Image 1 (cartoon, helix red, strand yellow):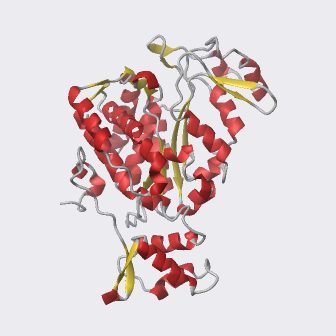
Image 2 (image 1 turned 180 degrees about the horizontal axis):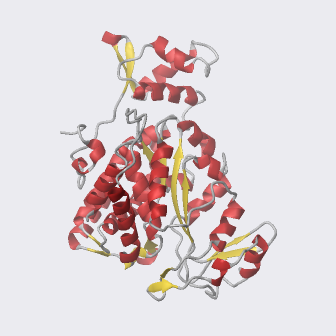
Image 3 (image 1 turned 90 degrees about the horizontal axis):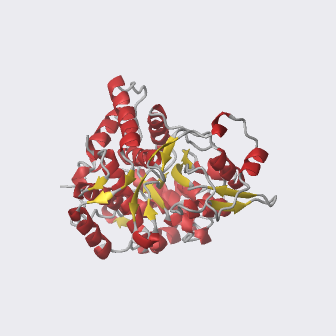
Length: 441
């Protein structure tokens, strides 16, 4: 089975759901990255190793079925035997304690290139004090059990997990995105002066949020915050499907997905290799890719290449291969380019003006509408958010100047400006994406 076949099988599994295929694709991608964890990597020279763990946030209007997409993927991953899910709600300190104290499954041991035996702690009832006592080790001596500590934050309501405006916690997660040191543990001193020492922490994230929730999670002055640049923001408009009574997917399809995820876990291990064609393609992409025009993604643009490498690892793993080939680069770069085309919509009016909430409400309404909307139509949307109606023309004028909306004189209404898809970009083929069918020639 190739990576496309696994996506096709998964789309068969979710075909009777209302969530957009875009959300389903990236939910499955996050799950594959999480199941691989740290057992599979790409050597990145003096900068260390690139692992396939990803931070992915599905962003959309309420009712876009983000939760459905996340829960569907989580269900299939759990059925394949994955158990390292995070708590539904936590604090930074408790998260670190749980990360070190997770019950141990037999996992891949990087040092011996084989399965590590389960820790004796798996059968013990540990209190936080027990964990702290067991962690009083020297991070400089490499005194650890050789078992990476991995966790998958699978939170369809991400702010429920991390809280609103918890920059301290999010900064920690940002630091752990690419943390790698084979000899030392990640150390952290708690407020009670006890120190945690965690070996090879590996975090994967699949979260869901609305535009309002995103603004609650990040203050407007945190637009360049490191966590956001490490997060892939996946936006999709609602699919438009209305399914009152969804049918149960065929057992063969459910079992096929679970089986393939299990095969990925068993077969894809060790250092990834790369064909000459794949390497040349990646070099070309790195040297020629233009930064995103939206200034808010300046920091993301500097990390775009590591994001792409993570995705190539995942695409190769979905083929049950440890060698990255040109087809993996093509699919990964296509997925990422498609997501980037929608990223400004994911951030919406975040960090732009004091009336950003009203502006975002207008954009959401226009994206959902299938016809131009008049000023009177839009006033109904924002009447509760603005003090007086005279503010609305200023907001609409600002959106026009920013080339977000246009006025259709014949219909006496506004339409959103849809960013065209660059079908001529190098190593991008939108025909590979089922969600793009009918949108390109």
